[in-house]
Amino acid sequence: MFNNSTSSDTYNNDYPIYALQIICVLPEYLNLFFLFCGLYGMYQGIEIAHPLYAVLFLNLIVPLVATILDIIVYFFISSMRYIIFSNIINAVSLFFHCTSWCVTSGLRFVYIIYGDWFNNFIPNQNHQCATAIILSCVLTAILSIPTFAVLIGYGKHIIHT
Image 1: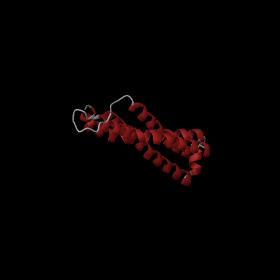
Image 2 (image 1 turned 180 degrees about the horizontal axis):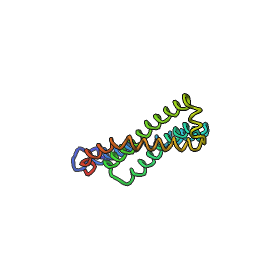
Image 3 (image 1 turned 135 degrees about the vertical axis):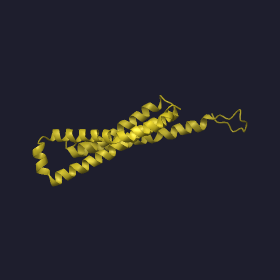
Image 4 (image 1 turned 30 degrees about the vertical axis):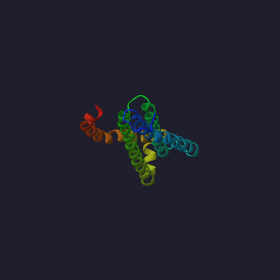
């Protein structure tokens, strides 16, 4: 694969590209390990049926799915397309992370200030949990649309290379 001779005919130029490919996907395997550990610890340690903890648990599931997608897609597309795909998936994951922490902050505020009113308004904890999860997903979509619209509009020529 790599020759020590100085002749340009015998030098194989694939070594730097192979190293780039390894560098691109190696963090995803580390993410996979740490996310599985975090999810297992969180699942064993807390009651995820509570709306606040359900959103935090989902906040670990979304990056896990993004990491699994990154690892799977890595084997089927070119390196440049993989980098673009990985950046888009990780940006969506980051948007979800920020949105879920915004929702958890709002839930904490509502539970502290308006706890009795909120429990009377939505008495079933399963409905509270579903509302919090749906709110996180909808807010992620709404808040990420303008950013991705601009990126897609200005980035069309990059994707086609």
